Image (cartoon, rainbow, N blue to C red; front, top):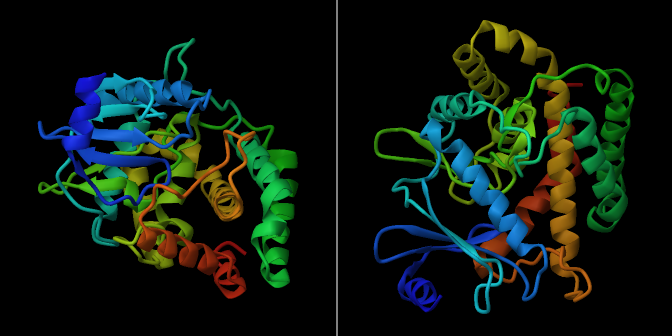
Length: 328
């Protein structure tokens, strides 16, 4: 225990831009992914080992960092840490490196599904499961987070339309794959060979690959990280989808295509609810009785300002209308 804590203290702390992890480059060249958690969080160890299993399962695709060690939660490190390879590189340049992102997604989505009994969660009905998450977020956080009645009305109108779709779509079989679920471009690192590595496996599950394509290209995602900050045109979005569909083959592409737009719309709502929760819970006083409360205490002040501005932009009525025009 002393050795790993000392190694983390002696390492190079990287800019705190993530909402769930801090990162320290150790002197031996590896990376410590330090999970944020409150002291005595009873769920921290489960989350840590779930991520570790995701790193192990995805390793064979050669597009995620290799896992070396799991450091259990302990005093001074309440969320624990994963020790992984450090990937030298930078955030993707959009739209120039969309094809590299598509290639990585296609590789990861082509992996075999986890065996029965794996701790990696499974959504047998991703449309219904994602809609349920959206409904819960809307009920708990949306009214508190969005002050503009017009923006709120746009969001609820979209939610009502997706509820209508659920009457038919939620009963249809949906193609499943490993889904990464947090594929905003800031979670990719492009190395010197132009390979896009996906580095944040916190939300990996069995679900719909269409979620990852949507999350990689929606403005709520492409504006999230300060090193990306790009709104893609409709043509640029289509280029990533087309590149991906070509890479996965005709049969899988034909199965997935009917789900691309419905899951894109649903993924946008999911990101909106994420932002609503983030805004409400990080601005509220700490509630010791709620270990699931999110906190931005580990973020750099500049990153806090950036995220609040981006969330405000995504809650802007005109921005919402412009995005919805893509499918309405």
